[in-house]
Image 1 (cartoon, one colour):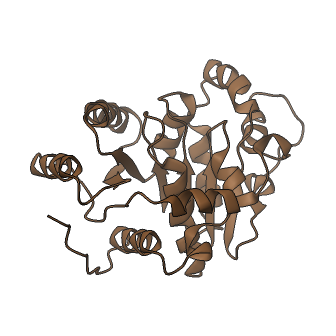
Image 2 (cartoon, helix red, strand yellow):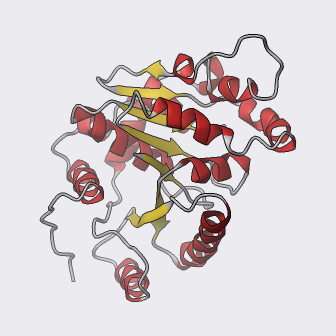
Length: 265
């Protein structure tokens, strides 16, 4: 299964969600790949412990092969790096993605990522794609390459208005480029269960028929500690409440039963 985590708005937890779901998948024994298409490289740094600028054989190098003449083309799996966690691998980002974007657009390479990830699907049980906070060539490529889309949602009114635009853009892309793509769910992130506004917004979105997932990810400093230690929560704090929420989210996405805690009034 190929999942993309996407939102045009920054600071909504795309990288955290991508990496922690992938880490849970890997901890369950599934060969799991994280594809980092954000030039900032947060997922790359989080899982490999190195800034993207220090790495060779990156997503940029893989994609550059499609626009540069070469007698020998390397396989996609040659650009995959093993993390220090069992079963968890990364196709890392690079700052070079910024410079390469115009070349790829000019050469109409929008479907190449899908081609590469389909080949990698033979080697991996699950693939998670992290994207930049923009609707650009790379995020469109990711949406075309994916089978499922997760949309993190920060519970405020600005995020709500942006959400409608995102769903409209995805609908157009589904119709024109990827009818296989399904919006798997909207994830309420940094949720504060004792505040009235987040609960009100989530209820209103649900009442509108939008696919809001039943698991809310709470706001916690533990996530920032996880980033600093370069360890997903399942490894750094397996018994923490936020870790359990990520595990519940993973179960929901895979059709497993989950006993959810009631929200505070």
